Amino acid sequence: MQRFVTALALVGTLLPVTLQAQAPPTPGAEHKKLAIWVGDWTYEADVKATPLGPASKVSGKMTVRPILGGFFVEFEGRTLDGTVVYREVDGYDPVAKKYVWRGFGADGTIDTVTYTIDGTTVTYSGTVVSGGKQHYMRGTVVFAADFMSNVEKRDVSLDGQTWMPHSEAKFTKTKSSPQ
Image 1 (cartoon, one colour):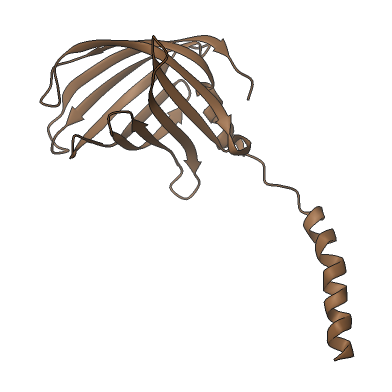
Image 2 (cartoon, rainbow, N blue to C red; image 1 turned 180 degrees about the horizontal axis):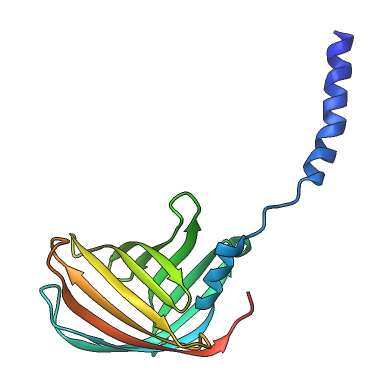
């Protein structure tokens, strides 16, 4: 019994030292690539008429900030009057070796998307659940060399086989935020 108490006391003494010696994890190079999104943005989009809805012009503001120690970034999309209409969290999946985004719209829309970053080009694909139905999306975001603006082109599909243009958007960074 005395050996057990001694062993327990030794473990109790060494455990805090061991826990202190372990440095917290830090984001790797792939996580740091998410910084291309960080900042305050304005956007204008030209949405095409598709079976998913009518044509429209959309504009607003987007704020992107690092969260959870820089392992993820959070997007908050607002209308020009400041109403929050979209939230998204992006991160890097080291197993799939792809970036992931999970987005949520004020209309109940849910995006589940994976993407790659290759220089100034982001290529993505995934699904959108909207109005109780799932459809597919794919697209590209091409940044200017200084990463202060980008153009996004998106296609949609009802079946994942036949694609149609959905939208083209221009984003302009109004303020960079440090990561």
